[in-house]
Length: 379
Image 1 (cartoon, rainbow, N blue to C red):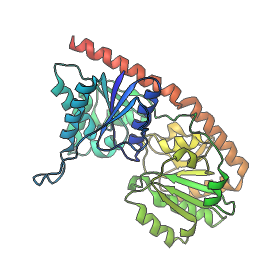
Image 2: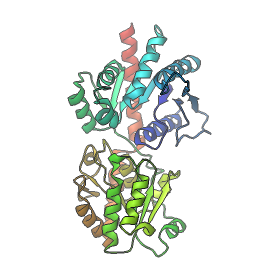
Image 3: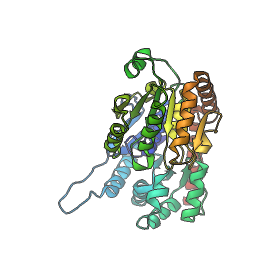
Image 4: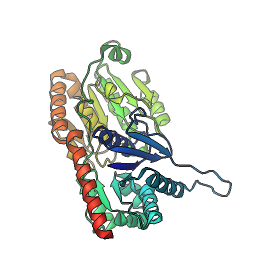
């Protein structure tokens, strides 16, 4: 199959999933064409089955903001024609599904079906804004196929948008052969030279991630024991987090690494992963940590309870309850055997439910289903 994929080429979960999906599809023999404004961060440019097509971000004095939705639609049509694409798969409804809809209309009467995958904030924060709700609903309803990354997000979409059409729930995934625990004593020594336990957080540092809560949880741990906190990522809340670490007196024990490649190698060195988000529609970072045998303390919000079983392979707390999260963290780090047991169970859970080898065929079958339905409708 020849598949076009569009997502945000950044460190957010939707962009990571879009990129990893494309690479897994390429590994299974499909030709994958990424269409976006920059190369996706995890894209392998050396794979002969992976191709990148850059959509223009137009700068013109008449426009206060670039009409990216329009230039992206033109690039989608261009790639469809030049590469004989079978299907487009867009991740994150706004603006990608709108661009795909325009590309399909421009391609008519030729068949250009597209699938929209809903990831979370395109529904819970952006799409239900009164300024975007009608166009988001319309682009979802007009998509040839729609998938959701969790049952939670499926329910939110139906409730808030009144969607009547079928939506397929296909969860996020992780390559279980690549995401596994490989101890790296040199890296551990760089972060924790005296053998301290290592806590970790990974995100795009947006307000919804509540990364100051991660700092506060760590500060509570530091009151009881030596430890280090590794913060991976970047975004608008990085400076406030650095200032808060100084205010709590733990700045020397908090390592802000910024945006990083080789995430799986770094996750595999952690003893505990923190995900204190106000809301997560799935919690991809938690799944990646679990696959690396790292227990997770996260919030009981959104789709996270579908990924983490409280008290078995991690702990769930209410958003903002840093005191309870701190108690759980101290418990796990004080008993290395308990942390290792939870991490082992987390790995088993990830392998059983979310391995790429099981999830990617779900997408392949859905592509075929959508292509058959699109052909039948046009006939």
